[in-house]
Structure formats: C-alpha cells, structure tokens
Length: 368
Ligand SMILES: *Cc1c(COP(=O)(O)O)cnc(C)c1O
Image (cartoon, rainbow, N blue to C red; front, side):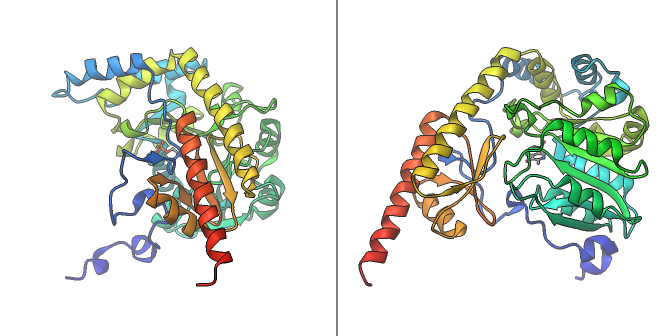
C-alpha cells in the first residue's frame, strides 16, 4: 500500500513535526513533576469547573457551532464586536487555519527561530516556505531583522511575544511600531499565548490596533491553555478585523470548540482575581527558579513567560533524561526549557537538578 503516493504534494514533502507534543512513542505521565509543556499548575478557576460540569449534562447536544456566547464575552472583554473574534479548539488550530486560508505554494512565512514549531508546520503543510531568521541577542524577536527580511514572496510575518521556547520579550510599543511600518499586503500574526505573564512596564496587547481599526491585516492569537489553566479542554481565539475573521471562519476548524470548553472559558473571563493570583505566583516562581539556576552555575535567559530557558554544563537531552529518572519532566531544545510550577514543584526541580549536576561532577572526579 503506497499511501504517500495518495497524499497531496505539500504533505508528501512536509518534514515530520518537531513539536514534542506530537511525539507518540509513549504518553506523558501526569503524576510527576510535569514542567515540560508550560501548563498552569493551578488549573482553571473553580467557577469554570462548575460551568464545565453543568455544560457536560448537555453533551448529547452539539455545541453552539459559532460559540456565539463565548464570542460575545470576548468581544465585551475587548470592547469589540463578535465579528472581530474567531474561536478555535486551541490556538494551534488557528495557526493551521491561517495556513489553510492564506498560503499559496511558494509563499514565505517569516519568523525568528527558534520559536513555536507550529508555524513551520503550518507553512510546510500548505506548500509554503518557512523563512526563519535568528532571534535577537536576548533571544527575543528581532524586529529590525524581520523588517529587513520581508520580500515580495513574504505572505505572513509571525511574531511570538514573549517567545517560546526562550521567554524573550520585546516591549509592546516596539511591536506596534513594527506593525505600523510593515507593508500592508502581508498578514501579521502576533502570538500572545504568554502575554498574561508579562510584568514589564511596556506591556499591552496588539488587540489595541484592532480596537483602533488599523487598516492592514493583523491577527492576534490568544489561548486559554496557559494562564487560564485549560490546556486539556482546548480553547483559543483570534482577534482581527472582520475582513480577516470572515476568511478564517471558512475553515471547519472554526466550529470545533466543545460545549464544555465554551462554558468554562466564558466563566473564566470573569475570574480576574483568580488570574491575577496565578500571575503573581508564577512571577514569584520564575524569580525563584532563575535565582536557583544561576546558583547552580546555569546560564539563564531573561524571561517574561511561565517558563525559563537555560543551559547547564550538561547537554540538554542528558539533563532531560537524568531528570526524568527522578520523575521531573522538562523540555529539550538547543538549551533546556523548564515551566514554572507550584513552589513545591519548582523546588523539586531545583533539588533534582542539583543532584544530577553533583552526580556528574563526582563522575568527572573519579576515573571510570
Ligand atoms: C502554548 C502555545 C500556544 C497555545 O496552544 P494551544 O493550542 O492554544 O494550546 C500558542 N502559541 C505558543 C507560542 C504557545 O507556546
């Protein structure tokens, strides 16, 4: 059976996804110190739990296909119209919809690398060409570099801020400046998955440009997976002009938000105090983990997200493997990435890493 011969040309040429969450050699255990996916250790607001269970009793009914009440709640949150909002089963689904809607074969998707691998996947899946340039020295997006790299082939420019996996942050006014001077025949995508964790003073959402009615295609990606603690129930959204939203909404992915996800997300939007508390715990946690990593001799990249990108004297895949033996999961890139957990989880991670580094130091001292 030659299924590859049946696939479309883009998929035939597409390299396997690098996203760790797509690896299927085993499941990721839950009952460990799980600091590998930037999840919230605090879960969703308690009232969202109640709303989710109440909605579950109507699971024989289809969800509202257009998630109208959720769109209404999001529109109210931003003083926009429901026509400015697309809801999706996680913002990863929206990244795919972007490719499906905008990419013709050969179109370039420009971004800085390393960043969220979903953007390279999206380009490849639709016959586009990923066009990565390096991050800036502080491992945030290099806006001048991006601007200079725009060519007639550029269809989409992606900005992830704060960036994943590095945590690097560009002040919001710089992003606004970039968007204002960028040509108006490309789609600018700003992924704000981690913006709720930022405590830099120059910090506002690019939704502002949509509120002001900017006359160029700009799309802001947001998710309930991170600070809202809902990664498991898959809900995200995009904010843009009605013209962009209308085109995106032709995709069937745009109907795929489940009834329980809609109910939980609507309620979560009202739980400001809960979210503010999560932010303050995470900010404290990242200060603690940064400090401790430095004490252990690691290089630590400045972060505004709920994770830290660091390097130690060991290769990142070796640290990941050694920590896994101790039931602590982190992620491997060119450096290591550890999510911020509860204070207990953060301490467990630091203790385990300290042990691992001490074991290595011992081995180096005694000839084998
Ligand atoms: C986690 C993450 C998302 C959100 O993914 P969901 O599909 O909404 O769970 C989006 N962008 C980046 C950069 C992320 O790290």
